[in-house]
Image 1 (spheres, rainbow, N blue to C red):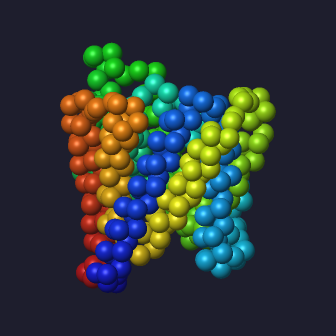
Image 2: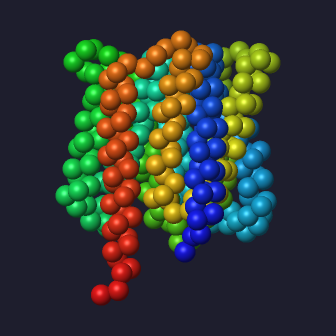
Length: 294
């Protein structure tokens, strides 16, 4: 049983992790207008290896990244790289807050994947929450007003792909560690970046390289705190904190691009958040019911 202090620390660490990941997203949006997506992929992954290697060391070194599922890691790496590139491209035509709101539809895709990959049953409550969540996405994108933009399909692809990577991680949780997933996926993305970067090379100056360094470092640090948060407290407890990324997205849009969120963005985001939290609550309740004595 997790103590109150552990849960408090877990919530705090998740909040810190999301703040750093949101900084990374802001750096990605800035770089999307300066360098190519494969370059961004490489530099983000390369510099993120610094804190990830620290995590691996703290978790026991090579033992922490030993894997029994190399092909699973390879598949997740490809999916993660595709999601990252799509996110980078989509940000060129969307505000950070809108992009994050659409990406937060990932839990709804996870519900579907969990049925077919993990054999989980999808009840009426979760199906209803999924439809409500997608309604929130429609509100954010405002298709009737022509605001959907060319970036929206990329963000929906990110949500669908990210959801699949998470379910695959759950499927292999019995043999693979969080450090293993982080290490192999990041290393694989570095190699993919090296492979595709020459075909999409754009000149880069020292200032841009510095931004790349901050992007990778903030992403790696954010991931460290998020992994530690899940270690300290149940996922269903700390996961709702991820929605604070929307607050950071709105703040960064205003600070760096002088873009204020529209009412539709705020309303749709609230709907997405509520449905996502409800799905987490139902999942936690379902698990608790499974372990209750008859």
